[in-house]
Image 1: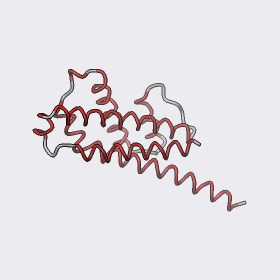
Image 2: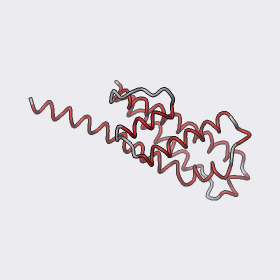
Image 3: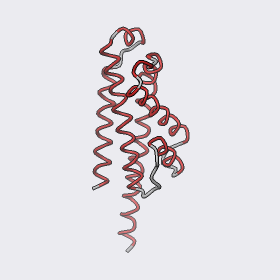
Image 4: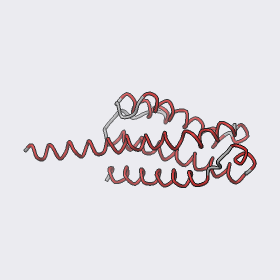
Length: 151
């Protein structure tokens, strides 16, 4: 059951990434002058980060790891458990912080920073995250198969 939820969440995030990649303007000037493009990119950014946090919680439950007391701690737990690298952990924590600014402090949004994150970072960072999560699932499945054959 939990494994299926993880795989569904990976698919959902992959779809969000694909949709985002189709709407990102090619340059900052286009992004800055189009309210629709900015709003769409910001919304996809929020949806992707929220879904990654949910996926992180699923993995923590799946691996029976310590539960975080705050969302940003979950990436540190995944890092300490060697599921993600320290570099990726830091990037995901920063993305979560930016998501909070987008969701709660709309007037303080730095459009240049959001554009650079959406255009240059979020897609590759989240694809790396998904690949590492898929690896955890496949390794776990391989271990189960090995134990069955060992008997």
